[in-house]
Length: 237
Image 1 (tube, helix red, strand yellow):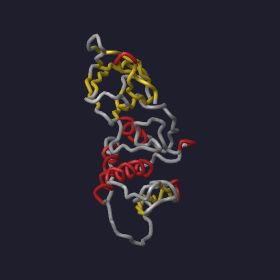
Image 2 (image 1 turned 180 degrees about the vertical axis):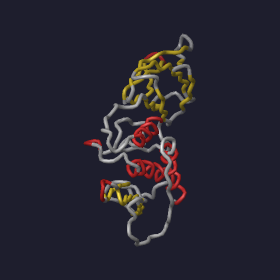
Image 3 (image 1 turned 120 degrees about the horizontal axis):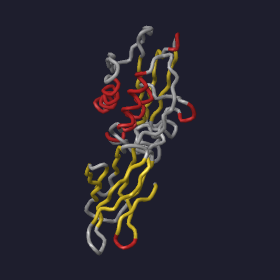
Image 4 (image 1 turned 180 degrees about the horizontal axis):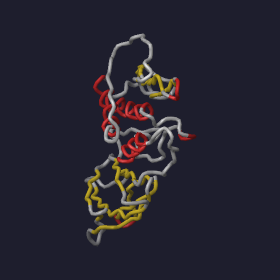
């Protein structure tokens, strides 16, 4: 459990350190001591369940608009059937909550969440790695000075693909000259060149095999589905 939590923490730290050097230390012991004005303490609490959620973060503000303490609570069981979370499920929850703890927190009605299903900051994310948009967002946040005004730039230029076809053997894709493979039951995040792009899918209808192009929109999730004539298509999820 300890290594899973630290791995989630370090994924964010790697992106932040690309623009800002900072020190962290981990003490896995409870200790009552005064808060140093230059230090923010993170307390991680574990519970079987947390009121239908898998994790929460609470910021405790101090003087001069600094945060003195962050309390993160992580559930160890599913909120629906009392099943113990797997290591990957706990890793996904911790990764999402560390995003809040490092600053993606309470920004307007979204409360630090992303509207893109490929982001770990999506409200019900199960991703265990950061999307390029997550990395860019946290870097941009730590580039800001206290006097700068935060403005939303909109969703990052990414799409998420889900394998919803009955085809058994994997599907080949091409985006901006780069080839990808997606297998059954998998999902795939892809970075676009802009707000719109052309995604090519390799398909083999009865007349032969060919690449078919589909216009895709940033910030959208798609199912790869079966369509008439043995062909493949995209459907907005």
